[in-house]
Each structure stands twice: as structure tokens, then as C-alpha cells.
Image 1 (cartoon, rainbow, N blue to C red):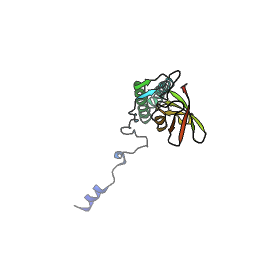
Image 2: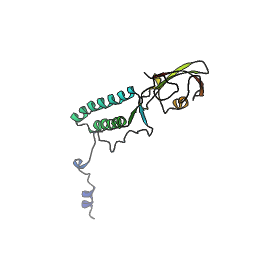
Image 3: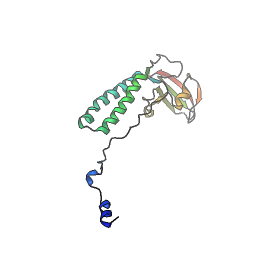
Image 4: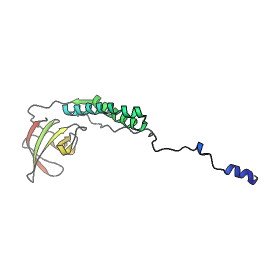
Length: 170
């Protein structure tokens, strides 16, 4: 092939045909939020929180819709699907007025071997907030407590404890 012809093919491609991004590409198949395989037990407070998330996300959809921000809209829609599914599968559990055993929706106070006391309320997975004493009914501590009564001793993950008091969740 003559040299002149080879150079013609070696020329750089026009910039008009090169795809450039501005960093705001829409993610391909944004993964769904994982949903627990356990029953979706909720307290009345937990059900209110789910409904609140749905209302907030429905309102939040408007901003990315107006600005045509497909990435943000995709994220909001994914979260909205999650919370709508959680609401659809929610099983409201009413607390007993005078619980005799630790179960979902019960506030239990325990005394550890070292003398410290701690209270836990067994709630749904989405409602859990350990810093506030709200623990998922599926957590290791809750699983160790379920079925116990006042005076029972059990091994919790950190140390042994005794059940001191049971109350309905507030």
C-alpha cells in the first residue's frame, strides 16, 4: 500500500464521533434493595414509619422528574419500591397489655452479671435502632430473649443476664 494511502487511514477520528460523558450517566440496572426473607412484623410505630418513608419518597420524586435527573429518579424509585413492598408485606402485631413472656412488641429490662441494667424493645427489622433500645426481633439478643419470663436467666451475646421486667412497647 502506498505511504500516502496508509496515512489517510492513520488519521485520528473526528471528535464528533467520540462519546464523552459528563459523569452523570444513568446507572445500568440499579440493584434492588435487599428484602429480608423473614416475616415483616411491625409495631404501629413501625407501620407509621414505613408510610412516612413512602410519602417522603413520593414527594422527593418530583425534583428529579422536573430536572430530568434520571440517576436520582432511579434511586428514589428503587427506594420507593422497597418501602411499598415492605408496607404490602407488613404484619401489624398489637402488643399485649400485660406480657408474661418476651415476644415481638415487648419491652424487656434485663440485669447483666456486672449489675448494669438495659432495656430493649423487640421491633421489626426496619424499625430497629439499637442506640434507642429498639432491636430487631431477629437479632441475636432478641432471639436469646424470646420466650423468657421475669426471673429467667439466659446467655446473651456479651454475658449472662436476668429478665427483670416486661412491658408492652410504647
